[in-house]
Structure formats: C-alpha cells, structure tokens
Amino acid sequence: MIISTKRPHPPRHEHSVPWFWPMAAAIELGEAGLSMFKENLRYVAEAEEINAPGPSVWATANRVIMDLDTMLLRDFMPAGGKPTRTPVLIDAPYAGHSSTIADYAKGQSLVATLQANGLQHVVVTDWKSATAQMKDFDIDKYLTDIDAAVDHLGGKVDLIGLCQGGWMSAMYAARFPDKVRRLVLAGAPIDTDAGDGPIKKLAHTLPLSLYQEMVRAGGGCMRGTTMLAGWKSMNPEEQYLGKYLELYRHIEDKNYIKRTEQFERWYENPIDLPGAYYLQAIQLIFKENSLAKGRFVALGQRLSMKDIVCPVYLLAGADDDITTKEQVFDAEKYLGTQKSAIVKKLAAGGHIGLFMGTRTLNECWPLIASWILAEGVLPES
Image (cartoon, rainbow, N blue to C red; front, side):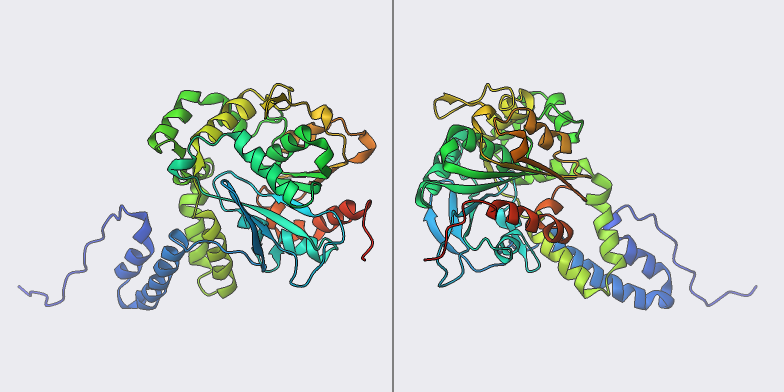
C-alpha cells in the first residue's frame, strides 16, 4: 500500500459571515489567490473607512454669526464682501443628517453654485444634534429661531427650504409672509397625502405608538442611528451589501473611493432630533397632512398656505423615492401665489441629488439663482 505524503486539500467551508467572503474565497484558492487576498485586505480597510467614517465638514469658508439653541447660523459671504441685496437663507434638512449637505464638497456645493451665479450673500441653518436638554423642543421652537435668524439678517430673506427644511420654510412663509421675498421648495413634502412613496406608506402604516416607543428608547430624543437604520431598510440590498460590492469592484479607482468616503462621512454620521419635534412632524405633517389642509397651528396662529403670496419655485426629483414629485408639486393647489408666479421644475435623479448632485447643480440651480435675482436687486453703493 502506498501512502501519499501530500497534504490533503483543506475542506471547503460554508462562510456564514458575508463581510469576509472575498477573503475566504481567496484563501481557498491557495497560492493562486494570494494577490487577490492582498487586494481584499485593502478592500476591508476601505470598507471600515466607509462604515465608520469621520464627521462631514463644510466645503466653503464661512463664519458663525449666531449661536441659537437649535442651530448655528453660518454666513458664507466671501471675506471682504458687501451685501448688495436680500440675503439667501438656506433652511437645511433637519431629518437626521448634517446640514453640510447644502455645502457638500468642492464641485458639489449648493452654496458655491448660488454664489457663482450671482447670489453672494448665502446663509445656512446648521442644525444642532439634539441633546437631553433639547428633547422637549417643538416645531414652534425651531420657527422661533428661524425668525430670530431672519431678523438678524435684516428682516427679509429669499428662503430656500430643502427636504424637511421645506415644510418648515413653508410654515415660516405662511406665518411671516412679509419676511419672505421669494420661496424655493426643493424636495419638500408639502402635500404628504399625494403620491405613493415609501415615506407616506411608513407614516400611515406604522402606529404613532411605535414612533413614541423609539423616542422613549432614545431618552426623549429620536436617535439618528435609529433613523439611519430605518432609511437603510427602504433599500436593504443596496445599503447592506451593494455599496460594499461596488467598493470592491472599484478598489483601484481612487476618485471613486474618495467620493464614497465623502458621502459616507455625511451619511453614516446621523444627528439626533428632539422627541417633541419629531413626533409632531410624524403626527401632524405626515399622518394628518395638517399643513396642506390649513390645520397646523404655529406660534399661536392657524397657518394657511394661502397666506404665501410671494413668488414660489418648486423643485422635485423624477426618481425621488423619499419625497415624491406629487408631494412637492401639489403645493401649487394650496398657495396664495398667482399661478404665473409659480415655477415647477422636475429634475433628473433622486432625492439627495437635488441638493448636491452635479447634474442638478449645473442644470437647475443656476436657473433658480437667476429666478431669485430677477426682481429687487439693489444697486451696489
């Protein structure tokens, strides 16, 4: 009997941890897979970077001109610049992610795009992550601080509301119509009964008690990490597997990796919201659609969208699965603005791309800047 001196081939294993499957596959290939194994080590390092990245940063130089309970008010006027017209106030989304989405990166900045197209004095609401002391802040508190910011800027602004900042901006314009010269609502859920998007389904399907329980679990705040898990559950294949496969396929593309890391710094660092504010928004905005129906009471006054009579620009994304185009465009039904002073624009792409996508920034926002500049420009003195 001849006894073989060769080592038996190691048995193949069923690898139950998807995170390590590329490395496991390389190991089982033996020496032929060594180079692939090394590449997979690089992949794991990059995956760790996009899974636990550092915080997002502002791309454009700015200074803090107010420190309010709910926000830092950031002024992007270039050094030595002199205001020559009504300032532009961007009401950034307050929905669980940083306000830096308004000034995301070089070449992908709404702030910089507006400035390059004639709007030098741009100011942004940099919303603070809620602390335990902020848990009882309600929508009135946020409207009060927006009003303080507007007064600090001279008492009148061109107001741009992004996403959840859109319904807040619409509320402000309805409550203080004399303080808003022009209003831009981008990806803003105004008529939340319109369309058939996933957010509408979640709002109407899940009972308020579930949202209340999540707030209780967060010590009176809606934790950003909880919301992030909810957002990801809308596209689980993409969020929990797809992005890592894409990173693996593009491991040699330094620009791709840089872009991915940039996005993950914003996306994977959620902020917390006050429980009172969050539950009000769920119940009154998304479940009852009270703003569109004229039933929302803000700062002691029932709001009517008919009180908004300034020119309004409505921007929606054709493939937006967060705020459907119907939720944005149906605002036209409720506004007091003359139809001839309402502009509706459907942009290619999805939700986040409305604020930082290069195509939308290049094709849509310069037109919006021109629309804002169309009337009331003050001569330089």
